[in-house]
Image (cartoon, rainbow, N blue to C red; front, side):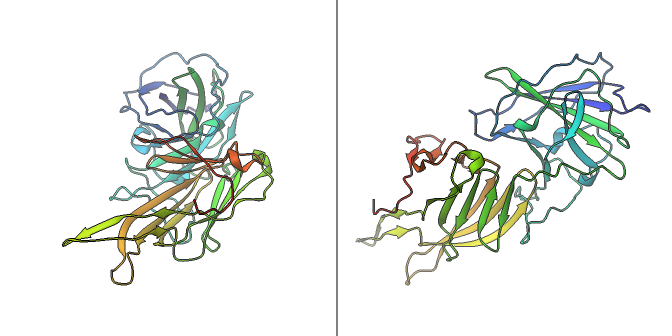
Length: 341
């Protein structure tokens, strides 16, 4: 659950009014993307500022993704005019965040180079930061110089009733520098994703299959290759006009073409278009688009299916690929060795 409180900065930069909205969200277990779906903004009302409260939220791996339709009551929609802060020891500290634009088709707006571009957000875009970067709630906060408004965002773990807060602050001109931290980058030239806790590499062949995983020392790893490539075997049987035949598809049976990337401070995003090679007598069959999100400790697909890398350590048997949909089997342990099985 999340609550945002609209705070207009007065001459002193302190909050003058408080408006509130409550959010019912889609919450999953720790390390699955936390998507917060919030209700429309209520009209601002004068109310007493809640007292100070220390952060209790302990969720480490969750991103917080908020639809920009919920950022009502702010004076502008140009992304360059915003910064996100957390309160620590009574002071505002900048935290990594990013705005991600979605097009009319609902897809993220990406580019070949992956550079961040400021834009005017509408109701279908996203504000993203990490739950771990939230801070305390202060009884009163002096906004940074030049700020004219702020929105307080409360993030709640409904299972443990733990809470943390962040402040989205608007600057009409000359905003201060954002947080210098960047959690993940996708290098298109080398087909590699590099995050604080891991590196993932893909083959340079047209199939672009997963070719390597390394766990950083910050996550308990050694930096050595965890796997040398991903093997896949699919053996379907086809019937047509009374004839039956079978074939075997491997990790090299797919053709992958880049459809754009984005490198933001919180997550790197890569989208590819896949096709299936049915053999020399048939044209390639388009198999849709796949978007991968790379966070500091995890890589996720919106199926939902998430690759957990944070606790892998130096033991390759601890690295798992875990599905979360109906009929999901237990996590499959990867031993880092190529076998025919």
